[in-house]
Image (tube, rainbow, N blue to C red; front, side, top):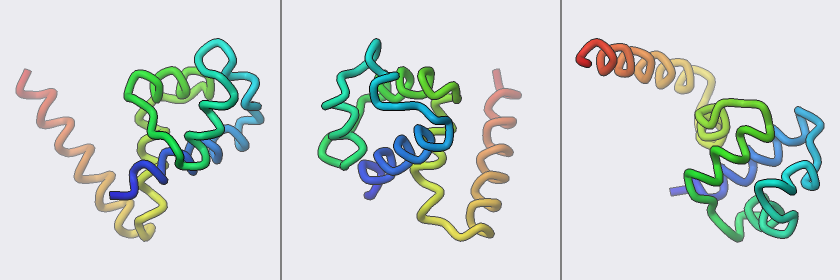
Length: 95
Protein backbone atom coordinates (compact mmCIF):
# COMPACT_ATOMS: atom_id res chain seq x y z
CA UNK A 1 0.00 0.00 0.00
CA UNK A 2 1.24 3.51 -0.78
CA UNK A 3 -0.47 5.35 2.06
CA UNK A 4 2.87 6.14 3.70
CA UNK A 5 4.07 7.92 0.56
CA UNK A 6 0.70 9.52 0.05
CA UNK A 7 0.62 11.14 3.49
CA UNK A 8 3.98 12.83 2.95
CA UNK A 9 2.99 14.16 -0.45
CA UNK A 10 -0.41 15.32 0.83
CA UNK A 11 1.12 17.02 3.86
CA UNK A 12 3.65 18.91 1.78
CA UNK A 13 1.04 19.85 -0.84
CA UNK A 14 -1.39 21.23 1.75
CA UNK A 15 1.42 23.00 3.57
CA UNK A 16 2.50 24.74 0.36
CA UNK A 17 -1.07 25.60 -0.73
CA UNK A 18 -1.82 27.11 2.69
CA UNK A 19 1.55 28.92 2.92
CA UNK A 20 2.45 27.06 6.10
CA UNK A 21 6.13 26.52 6.88
CA UNK A 22 7.63 23.53 8.63
CA UNK A 23 8.42 25.89 11.49
CA UNK A 24 4.69 26.59 11.91
CA UNK A 25 4.34 23.02 13.22
CA UNK A 26 6.71 23.69 16.14
CA UNK A 27 4.02 23.21 18.80
CA UNK A 28 3.06 19.75 17.51
CA UNK A 29 6.20 18.41 15.87
CA UNK A 30 9.86 19.02 15.30
CA UNK A 31 10.90 20.29 11.90
CA UNK A 32 13.09 17.20 11.54
CA UNK A 33 10.17 14.81 12.13
CA UNK A 34 7.92 16.73 9.74
CA UNK A 35 10.62 16.59 7.10
CA UNK A 36 11.02 12.83 7.50
CA UNK A 37 7.26 12.38 7.07
CA UNK A 38 7.27 14.54 3.94
CA UNK A 39 10.18 12.51 2.55
CA UNK A 40 8.36 9.24 3.30
CA UNK A 41 10.95 8.10 5.83
CA UNK A 42 8.39 7.95 8.66
CA UNK A 43 4.68 7.33 8.83
CA UNK A 44 2.68 9.50 11.26
CA UNK A 45 0.21 8.11 13.76
CA UNK A 46 -3.46 9.02 13.49
CA UNK A 47 -3.01 11.38 16.43
CA UNK A 48 -0.15 13.13 14.66
CA UNK A 49 -2.22 13.40 11.47
CA UNK A 50 -4.91 15.16 13.55
CA UNK A 51 -2.30 17.60 14.89
CA UNK A 52 -0.90 18.26 11.41
CA UNK A 53 -4.41 18.88 10.07
CA UNK A 54 -5.13 21.34 12.87
CA UNK A 55 -2.03 23.37 12.02
CA UNK A 56 -3.02 23.30 8.34
CA UNK A 57 -6.57 24.41 9.19
CA UNK A 58 -8.19 21.38 7.58
CA UNK A 59 -10.12 18.35 8.78
CA UNK A 60 -7.92 15.24 9.19
CA UNK A 61 -10.03 13.51 6.54
CA UNK A 62 -8.89 16.15 4.06
CA UNK A 63 -5.27 15.18 4.62
CA UNK A 64 -6.07 11.47 4.34
CA UNK A 65 -8.25 11.95 1.27
CA UNK A 66 -5.57 13.89 -0.57
CA UNK A 67 -3.09 11.16 0.33
CA UNK A 68 -5.20 8.62 -1.54
CA UNK A 69 -6.57 10.79 -4.36
CA UNK A 70 -3.30 10.86 -6.32
CA UNK A 71 -3.86 7.18 -7.11
CA UNK A 72 -7.24 7.79 -8.73
CA UNK A 73 -8.53 9.16 -11.97
CA UNK A 74 -11.07 11.98 -11.58
CA UNK A 75 -13.89 9.55 -12.43
CA UNK A 76 -12.68 7.03 -9.81
CA UNK A 77 -12.36 9.81 -7.23
CA UNK A 78 -15.93 10.91 -7.90
CA UNK A 79 -17.23 7.33 -7.62
CA UNK A 80 -15.35 6.65 -4.38
CA UNK A 81 -16.47 9.94 -2.87
CA UNK A 82 -20.11 9.17 -3.68
CA UNK A 83 -19.77 5.64 -2.27
CA UNK A 84 -18.15 6.93 0.90
CA UNK A 85 -20.85 9.56 1.34
CA UNK A 86 -23.63 7.00 0.92
CA UNK A 87 -21.98 4.63 3.40
CA UNK A 88 -21.48 7.36 6.00
CA UNK A 89 -25.11 8.43 5.70
CA UNK A 90 -26.17 4.80 6.16
CA UNK A 91 -23.98 4.40 9.24
CA UNK A 92 -25.30 7.62 10.77
CA UNK A 93 -28.88 6.49 10.17
CA UNK A 94 -28.22 3.24 12.06
CA UNK A 95 -27.30 5.08 15.26
